[in-house]
Amino acid sequence: MNNKIKRFIFCSGIVFTLAACSNPPSRQNFDYSLSQGQLELAQKIALEEGVSSDVDIATELLWSLEAGTLLRMNSELDRSTKVFDTSETLIKENETQNLAASGFSQAASMVVNDNIMGYTPRVYDRVMVNTYKALNFWQQANFTDARVEWNRVDDRQHRAAEYFSKEINAQKSSVKSNNLGETYSGAMERLGDSGVDVAKWAPYDGYINPASLYLHGLYFLINNESAADLNKAKESLKRAYALTRSKQIRADLNLANGGRKVAPGVWIVFENGTATHKVERRIDLPLFLVTSRVVYTGIALPVLESGSPAYPYLSVNGGRQTESFANMDKIIQGEFKTEFTGILIKELTRAVLKTAAQASMRNSDNKTVRLLGALTGIAQAVTTQADIRSWHTLPYEFQVTYVKWPKDGQLQINPSGGAAIQVDLPATPQPVVVYVRALNANTVPQVNLLTSKNAI
Image 1 (cartoon, helix red, strand yellow):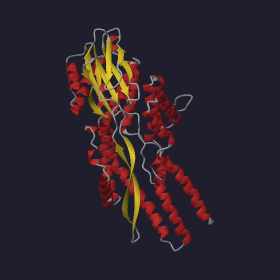
Image 2 (spheres, helix red, strand yellow; image 1 turned 180 degrees about the vertical axis):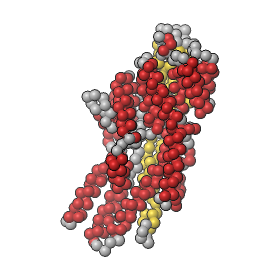
Image 3 (cartoon, helix red, strand yellow; image 1 turned 60 degrees about the vertical axis):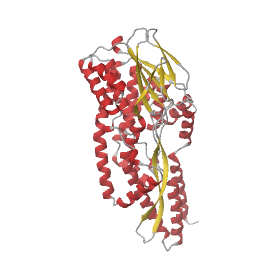
């Protein structure tokens, strides 16, 4: 066999191997374990894939986010916080990575696909890492470190709108500079024909995560140490109410306006279900290349499928029901919509480059080159894969309700269609949060108590 062909086949084998990274068996096993309520097995997979086994240091970002979340759900809070801490280190490395290395990775991804690059954290990823760390510390009554994390959450939220404004402007310029206007419009039209309506992906105003914003306000309301803390609570609750129009948040804002002293009572916060996830959608596009012929080639795009709640609501003491105030799907969809133009531009550019190379070789007078062109076509088909990576253990939504302090110091929580959960409140009446997390109906809801600093 011709040595050139041998070398090409060898390289193609490497390409095919790399291309298989879009949805590896470990991810499939992880998702199946979650769906069956096997959280310990899912945690084991996530730790093996993304965390150093001996010291709980994150080695692969996306897997470490899954591991930190599951450790938190399984009440291993110190380990969860450590994994999230080292996940943040990876996030910072992603933000400040060496430009030369980044350039090489970008070039390689144009030949293969984005799955060969490391996972790029989203703004909502960053916000939720600090939110979960803050909740871990709050649950442990470590109010000093909880305060630090809530301040980081607030800082990230304030920077979100500025970041996305720059991102949108950059993408508009990219469409023009790459002369992809007609092809871009055609791709969007075909995507719409396939049932994907990008226009429906709308963010909360300012790309804010209302759940993190509300929890920030609730923390400083319950644990305020000064008038400045109370002002933080008021500001966050006011903004959260403007975004959500939640009756409970309005009541909390009224409470904050009444002064620093907060009477004993129970907030029930319900982190419900699993968030939207990405799936691959393939479409065919006519690309006008340097030859006179029209070559049809496929592109693969990530699109979003809706998440799902574990339960419609929780009933508390046979009366009050939790109500949704923040939808994680909406948060993710809003960010993804702003990224989608860049994803589509890159995929179109990648398709043009690959198809141009294929067409050039197949039009050659040399038989060997034509054969290589055919093999290039096979490689193009195999490597055309969308990057569908995302954080799967995020919730579908956040719900909340409030009840006065029960005389017997007990709370009964009934998931709609699920078994009742008995919660023993602290001996000292105080403002507390009962934090409930359920991934799906196959998992036993996790219930944690977040107490007040002012009751200690």
